[in-house]
Image 1: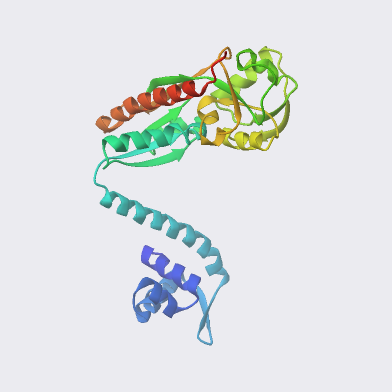
Image 2: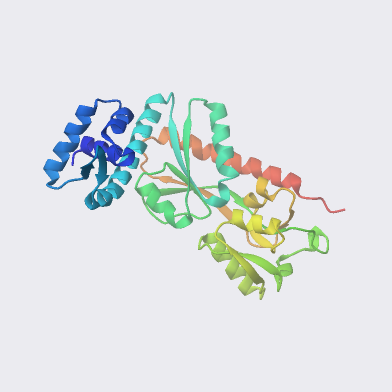
Length: 305
């Protein structure tokens, strides 16, 4: 079937009549009938049965509509992309951001870069660590923001800052903030994180090495969900500071672990990106954003008497 025939079939199937499909497509009824008839002749079987002026889909049409619906959705996305490209006044940057950085670092980067250049447009996609390499190599994104470098000669890793781990609780923990350590997690009810990224691996390994055995009462797939569970008093969570100090962590008790291993943040880009003049400023801006957010987090840390 040609694309126009698929479009006609899709609308006739969805509306149930030639006239309704013609109205949706803003064309004449005879043209819809003609295209549909040609499609059936080409296929060699009927797509609709005509009964008392109504079109009843055949079993073959029911089966084909599932595929036609997917094609039509892809075509709509393609047309939206064309319109977005046509309406752009300046450059366009596609960012892949880890979920834990998607509510803090990602939006702050976009806002800062648009302050400098209001004509810039952006697309933000949340990616897990294992998806970063493929997204860059397949050129689905221009830059990714993650917690570890990617070992691939086709990619460049730019270390843009560092962070600490934070214990988050729904109520104050006993003792002062200066003497609270990861040991408070031993045998405590805790929200586990079921992700295999570098932070998840590091947390599990460090707790095991230190003989800390929390009681995992719930498992979350993202740090954002873990924070929501903490807010419901389900248990404690050990997460990165950027998630802990995002707006989702507001009002919760947050204890930064300065003696616990930290982590670095990386901007990962293609080594031979065709528009280096677009990517390089984004890396520099990200470095500034991470520093600014880190300074803001530092200012929220309670000072010990």
